[in-house]
Length: 558
Ligand code: GLN
Image (cartoon, rainbow, N blue to C red; front, side, top):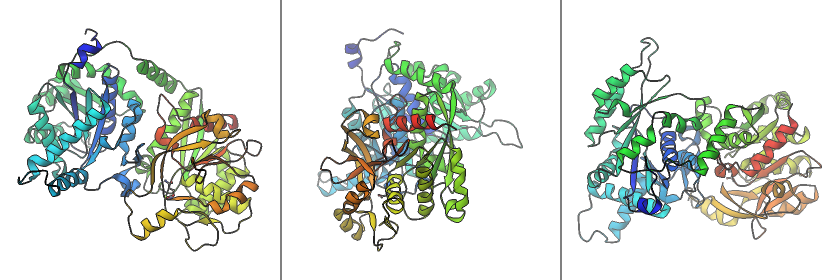
């Protein structure tokens, strides 16, 4: 492969890789799309990624995280699917709302255009106008990112009624520029326990369903618990109409970050370069050198850190909970990786501390405690008791959003002596609402305007001198992503500060409290953020507050 000069590369058409799923969902289509982007970025392409969600919802903000996974927030405040977080983390880029679409959004634009008379008297039809709007959005995202490769993940699985129009958009694009569009099908090969053999038939059916949409898979990712053997590769090749060299074995792995390398072991980026008629660089990029170091550290940790994550969205079994807080988990992994430590996370449902307060003592066995974001009143008293334990026993504590609000309430009750201190979310009629809504939110709530109306996206904060936050960030101004409706009540700030709580981060106008902490003389690390630092943590750029928390956990190690 020859090295391509920048000028020559600019002459090429932009390239598009559609990632679609066969057989079942939840087998790593998002991680595949992220990894495809990553390996092509390492080959010198400028990559952006798009997630298409087939549901009518305008965004992911109104969906239950235990059913749908985490709602990932972008700088511009868009509430999106958790896969957008995977793209940002793997590709180390910031995405915008242009990179995310749902059926609801696509139809909404077409209908608005129709009302504005933009179709010039034509009958507006599902086909081709809906796929055309999908293509317009893909183009817009590419232009905005100035990318020469776009990875487009189509949500759901092939054969579902609701993603048909997105496959139709892919077909139309491929018809127009066959050399610029590739289709990667992520499929699943079950190994039924009684049969004891890996079965290819569901994948064969998925490939044919894809054919029925007018598309042919160029590459098949064969997901399974075990590697694919030659026999099955041949069979898939024959019946799915894909050369066996383009069928990639993708067995389960311990770490998602190993997947790009695993793909490359099968020659994935060379395959794509060939399919897309593009000559990519083979020179190692700075990003890939750093990535290699990240992987090396992950594979050779010098020790473990035991971290308790306390909340309430953990009820529905391990499978679901890890998805509700995926960005928190990844942020912990990035920061602990920096110190060559392996995180061991324990998920604790706070409701247990309400019924069995003696159980709180188990927290003494952890090196650090995190309370992530959350909504509603269930389990909140249990969380407050756990925060009190962390404060009194001097266990490093990091509170994220609700975890900050509840830490302020705990402090108000037990240090500042404000009995009954609470948040409006728990009890709107309480006497001491330490956390409450902003005036503008009151109207929004009473009008029932729930979707997309929280305080969302990146806002600047000023970080006070001589604080833990300032030492961690090393700068006076930071920009962090928000997703909340409630705020620390300004009426109580003076009283809380007098009792020793430090508001080390504030909005530029000084009115909104962004970070609360205890001085280091009082506690080794006790800090909460009104924003969500986890959304901005990357493997190659761990978040500075997570780094500071991890450092405190290492010092506190039992
Ligand atoms: N429920 C709180 C609020 O809306 C916290 C939100 C969160 O943790 N993301 O303000």
